[in-house]
Structure formats: C-alpha cells, structure tokens
Image 1 (cartoon, rainbow, N blue to C red):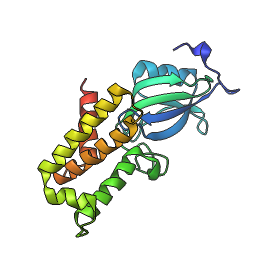
Image 2 (image 1 turned 135 degrees about the vertical axis):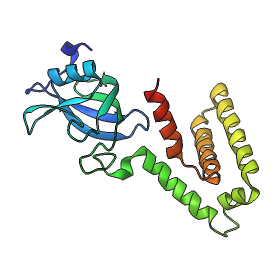
Image 3 (image 1 turned 60 degrees about the vertical axis):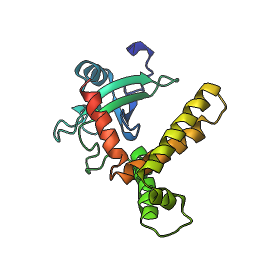
Image 4 (image 1 turned 30 degrees about the vertical axis):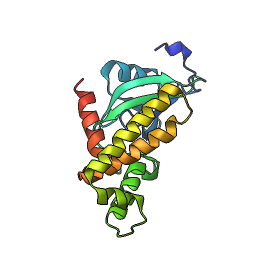
Length: 199
C-alpha cells in the first residue's frame, strides 16, 4: 500500500472500519497511524493507535481475541480504511461479536429469519407456506432448493434483472432445508471460516 496516497488527519491518523471477512458484519472502528498500519500489514494482526492511551495496541493482545488480516483498502476519498479480518473470538471488550448493536450483524438477520421458520414449523397454521413445506417433507424442500438454484442461475445468464429476487428465494429455501435437518446458517459459516483459515 502506498502510504503517500493516504489522507492522514492532523494527528497522522486514519479511521479504520473493521469488517468480518466471512460474514461481512461490521465489527468495530479504530484508528491507525503509519506504524500501526505497517505492523498490521507485516504481521497479519490488526493493530491500532490508541488515542486514549497514546500508544500502539494490537487487538486481542490481552484477551487473545485477535483480528487476523484478510484484506485492506482505501475508500474513494482516501481518508478511511476498510480492513477485512477473521476474528479469533468476540471483537468487543464486552464479549459481544461486534462493538455495534447486534441487530446490525448480517448473521443476526439470518438468525431472526431462522426463528420465524422455527415458529412456523411448530405451528398448525395450514395457511403457512413454511408449514406446508415441512408437512411435505425433506424431499419437497430439497426439490424447491434445486428449483430456486436453477432460477437464480438462469436469471444471471439471461440478465433479466431478477437475480436478487431469485437469490433471496434460494437463500430462504436453503434456510428451510437446513432447519429441517436441525442445522443453521451458522453451521455453514463456521465451515466456511474453517476452510478460510486452512487455505
């Protein structure tokens, strides 16, 4: 990275937005100076400059909950860094995944949807589409996943402008299939994380 392209503030700092490389959730915001950025790139461990302690600090140096660098880049104005990282435990000192409210986490949106699927699955409401899928069994749910995957692929190839809608249908039916097997999207993202650190 060309440090001369960075627009440092009057204290020689730049804000760094930390994003989970697996889930794309925003984990925290810190500040970096030239030294902490250099250490981050060379060591692979995300390091900041603490404005309150007036020193460099590597995330997780005490707790062990480090942030392992995956990628780093500048925004268009060259005054903010986006740092993609793999968190080795909770990022916030309070023990939560993110320093922001959990409702902003990408995975929590999925959890909420899984909760709705579970509620519907336990319901006797015959007008519920989810209930009808569970009543038909795993073969029918799997058939729908296959159907929606095909429609998503066709939408991409034909460029019909419906790829987001089709992809949303695919993810929804995949969640239903996972729940029918007592699995969650977290099981999937955990496997992706495992693969990413072993590559």
